[in-house]
Image (cartoon, rainbow, N blue to C red; front, side):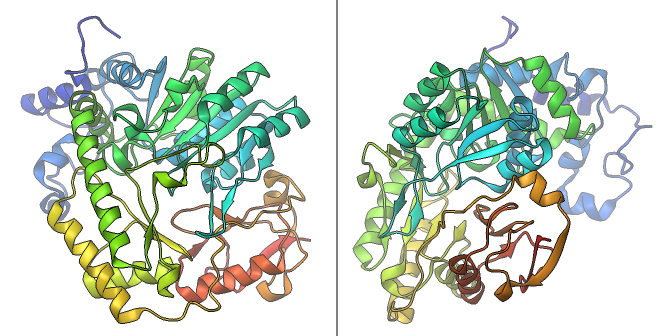
Length: 483
C-alpha cells in the first residue's frame, strides 16, 4: 500500500468522482452512454448511478489486472482486514468461495469441511474435481440446527486424511454459530494444510469488539468476506482475503478464469466506500447493532414460545462462540415452522426477514435498522403467536441430515443420469442439488445417497412453503439420479 494512503482514503471512489466531473465523451461501452440512451432506467436508478456505470479505462484501472486505483483500494482493504492481499469480487461471495477453493484444490485433492456449507463450496468441488472429506457438525436437537465442527472431529479427519490440501471452516454459520477457528487453523498448519474460511456472514468480526475471532486474526490462509451483508456495500460485492502463505498472483489468475472482464464500478466503488466506513466507524456502528440485537432478543424471549438464542449456547466445542449480532429465533413451541413465521411476517405485516427454515427464522439486523422497526417486528411476532399458535405435534425440526457420500460431486454431476419420481428415489445416488434457499445449504448434493428421511424432509419443506431450489424439475417432483 502506498505510504500516501490511509484508511481515510477511498482512491477508487475518488477517481470515479473526478472522472464524472470532467464529462468525458463516451465512445465506449456501456451503450446507455451515461444514461442518456435509456431514460427509463436512468429515471429508475438515478443519474448519479448511471454516470458511475462505466467501462475500464486507464484512469479507472482494470479489475482483471489492477495497477492503479483498484490496486490501491485492494491494498487498503487488505490492511483494514489484516490480510496480506485482498481481491475485489463482483460475482458475490459465491465467486469468492469458488476462487478460494479452485486456488487450492485440483482434481482428486481432498478438502476437509463441514457438510453444512453453502452450495458454492460444493459447486467449486464440481468445477475442480476435489474430493470432500465431510466432518459432521454437531447438532442441537432442541433447535434442530447444525452447529460447528469440534476440534476433535477435525483432528480425526486430518489423521485419516493426511494428504488433504486444506480445511474449510464456516465462520460463522447462518445462525451465528462459530467453531474454534484459532485451534483448527493451528491444527491444519501443523499438518501442512491450508485453512480456508467462508466468512460470508462474518464481515463485522474484523471491526467490532467482543465478537468471535476473525479468520485473518486466527491465522487463516484465505477467507471469503461478504461485504454486502454486514459490511454495507452493494449486493453482489465481496472480498477475497489471502495470507502470506498463498501465492496471490496465482489466485488472481484463478479469479480471472471465471470472473467477468467487465467489472461493475458501482460494485467496486461500493466496496471502497464501505471499507473506509468500516475502518473509520466500524466499532461504534457494530456496537449499536449488538445493542439492538440484544434488546430484540430479550423482548422476543419475553413473548413466550419463541426462543431467540444467543451466547448461552456456547459449550467450548461445536458452539465455541456465537455472533451476538445475529437474531436467530426458534419457533417450534408456537406450532409454526420458521418458514411459516417468515411468510406471515411478509404477507400480513409487510415485514421482510432474511429466511425461515423448518424450525427457525433469522431477522438480519444492521446499522440501517431503527428502534421503531425493531418494535414493529417484536409486536408482529407477539401478535402472530396470539393469532396462529397451534399444536406442535408432528412437526419436523431437523435442519441437517447427515449424508452418505457415494461419489464425488464432480463425478456425480457429470455422470449419465435419469429422472425418477422423488417418491421412488430412495436408495439411488443423487446427481443434482436440492436445497432450501436461503440459506442455500444443500439437503442433497451430487454424489449423495437419497434416503427415506431426506424424501420425507423435502416433502415436508414443500408443504410448509420453503423455497426449494437446485433440481432440473422446478417443482421437485422428479429428481435426477445416477444411472
